[in-house]
Length: 403
Image (tube, rainbow, N blue to C red; front, side, top):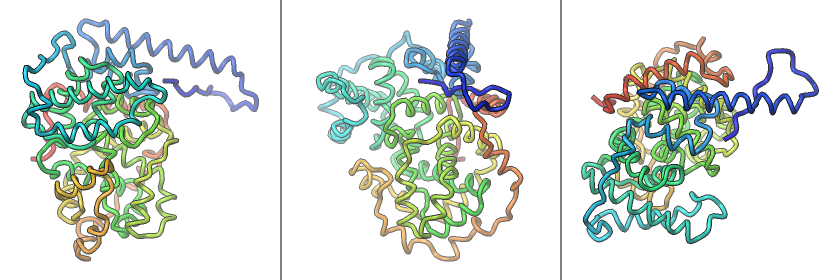
């Protein structure tokens, strides 16, 4: 993956030296590769440095590097692969038929031009990986969209390593999505509006008035954007970022996408259908490095611990179609987890509930807006804080978000 070229410190020239730009880019990339391998070859591996590399501009650069670094970020021993099940899982798994249907619909997740036979082979591997993880972890419940995450790992690291990495991911980062109900997933979605409110109260209030809720971001969250982004390079860049950070980072990234599209949202008719339609159609040409930087800044400015009370209040005040697993299944059956019975949104909120603890709270921290939304390409101090929070969480591998 190419790093955006860096500009010099001096005045902008009307005639950019293309040769100098290319030289600077190559030098920057070569330096980062060397730093990554230095961290990998340390004894033990310098995981904090690897997290910084994964977060910083350009991420981990290549799939070859990801094959080495992703296991370190997840603390997976690559020399100890999970045993193969002695059962015919396709015969005994209650999830087989649904997994089969989802995998058959996953054609667009494979690189264009891939030979059909190769793609079909990978789809068979994808089915077996999912069924094996579920068989080894009966506490996990399959959800439609899970295969979008698994296929990303499969295309980057191969079948054997995918099983180990996704099993660890499923029992930690994704654990709340794999409960039998949507309660914890909904709770995570309810962090979205408080984040937006801290940065842009006008946008927040407009979305509240439109009663759009947060269901438009469901497929973003539960697939780590794998389902909605068409360019695989962007998907793996985000996976670098999310694997290196706190497990709530995807909801911060969702928030910065909405904030980035502020004017588009405000130009919409203030009704649920219009705003939901706009936000559910995610642009493909987003400035990913800038948004990653902004998400890191927001995480530092407004950590989850400070937003937990507002997220809980949001959950009490709002009732959306994501509140029941039945609605989630109905939406997912169409391979569109964010498309749910829209007509059920209307009438579910009492007027007094719409404003309680959401619209009437004092407006604070307005001075933070410019600092948070500044166009920073390198995360700098924010990256160090994000890495620190990830390292504090990662060794325990416990997602205790819902006391």
